[in-house]
Length: 374
Ligand SMILES: Cc1cc2nc3c(=O)[nH]c(=O)nc-3n(C[C@H](O)[C@H](O)[C@H](O)COP(=O)(O)OP(=O)(O)OC[C@H]3O[C@@H](n4cnc5c(N)ncnc54)[C@H](O)[C@@H]3O)c2cc1C
Image (tube, rainbow, N blue to C red):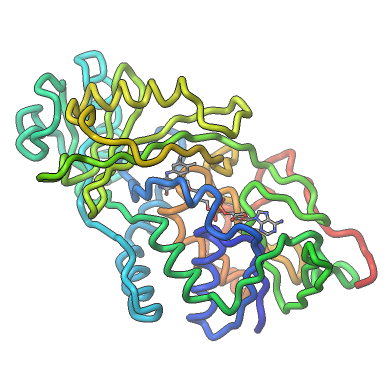
């Protein structure tokens, strides 16, 4: 089978990879591959540290995808010949002030009720693990199974692997025959015909598809470089500082990813106010970041749904949707790409598909393409 994939973020590329493992060929259409949300993401694989109340079926999906990560990474290495920057370094969640302890305890209670790996630590134990933590932190929880991958390394490897399948054009319009999508018209007018077309366009649009139940949730994030010497941190530190969240993700090369704001103000540019806040909160936890140099600041939009679960489903006999991965798209890449490839192959028995049905919201009435000549 030949499959058009519109959108080359981590989701489109991981789906292309999964389909190629299953023996299918792909065309990947994107004018700016890898430059969307996947370019900003910190790459925390955090089913325990990022868990929040009331997200029922999402917990199960995050845990399942996290468990698939080692295999995903090994397959990438075996087939593409390069190993992505995946680190099984675990995560410490730290309460900065005594007033933040309550939020930490609530998190631990939820993690325990869901059977997630989480262990309460004394501040002194946390500081033994990470000596750069401030001397006056109030409490900590250790999440042994919350690791990290550099999403840019995954995107880079997959773009190289699929270099001959890439079409550096915008997918302009769905091409239909009767009520079935049979291909995509690109910005140069070229029609790419395929047995199946998969939309991995995040917040992007394409003619022939009505607006999806998605909204942009902007995030500002920094990349900083520690001075020469021993690394500042050896595992992810997520902080609760005056009830606000901040995280520091140490990369193999000694740099740190520091994020991220959560804004719904419609501003796609970097927000100075958010940056100042992030830096203040991060410095409260790890004072040594003041000695780092600034490498990059960037803002991108998370493609968010009302329940943080993605939209994965069949829209017509030739069209599959896979988007709306909200704040967990990197973590959900292995599972999301498998579910999406299943749908492209018309395999519908995985019960998790019910959790990601694109029509689950009462106001969902998007699609289907109008009948038109191809
Ligand atoms: C600041 C920040 C931090 C984050 N941190 C984490 C994290 O630690 N862990 C985690 O799991 N997730 C994280 N996320 C979320 C994660 O980044 C997203 O869920 C994920 O990247 C979504 O991947 P995607 O491929 O769907 O979207 P994108 O990476 O946005 O890719 C979509 C692609 O579609 C293309 N496109 C759109 N329209 C068209 C069209 N018409 N034709 C052709 N191409 C088109 C775009 O050019 C783009 O390349 C973070 C997000 C942000 C913003």
